[in-house]
Amino acid sequence: GDSVTQMEGPVTLSEEAFLTINCTYTATGYPSLFWYVQYPGEGLQLLLKATKADDKGSNKGFEATYRKETTSFHLEKGSVQVSDSAVYFCALTSFGNEKLTFGTGTRLTIIP
Amino acid sequence: DARVTQTPRHKVTEMGQEVTMRCQPILGHNTVFWYRQTMMQGLELLAYFRNRAPLDDSGMPKDRFSAEMPDATLATLKIQPSEPRDSAVYFCASGLWGGGTDTQYFGPGTRLTVL
Image (tube, rainbow over all chains, first blue to last red; front, side, top):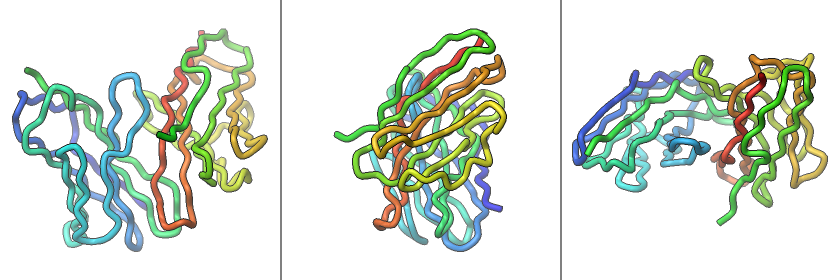
């Protein structure tokens, strides 16, 4: 079945540091890939997505590239801010299946 | 800015009581999902609907949980009787399938505490 493996947290970084959160997946066919972010006390928000190989999703300075050869969708940001502190979820949907398969989430804390 | 809304945002109840959570999906979306989030289990899909018809409720404890869509603007999740182990945050999400998109939009959640 489909699965998503995310980098274990928590992750603590200083402001302006470079961020990478690793995500790899197993899926049948050609999945769509997502990063969702959950700020404290809130629901999940779509951060970015990519629907085919080599697509790059980007939003709010975050980027992730759909790598079919390594089955990965790592999240990166060049310079993090305190406001980026949140839990980040990698997820996928398989073709023809609208159910999201989530990773376990990675808690990110940015310190000033 | 269209959003999924959920009520109540917080609910504290005693074991054995009935709990009803409500969700208003984004207007025009044809698919509605219910999730539960706990520290131990993470995010679990409980059930989902397409055009108000249930497609999959295999994630839901059948003996006490029920989910319905009385109309296109309202989805409900009911627990009767509630138990302390049901304490969690319950999220509703909606999306439009068949229109070339596969994104789910989440509501703010209902935080349920069963004493």
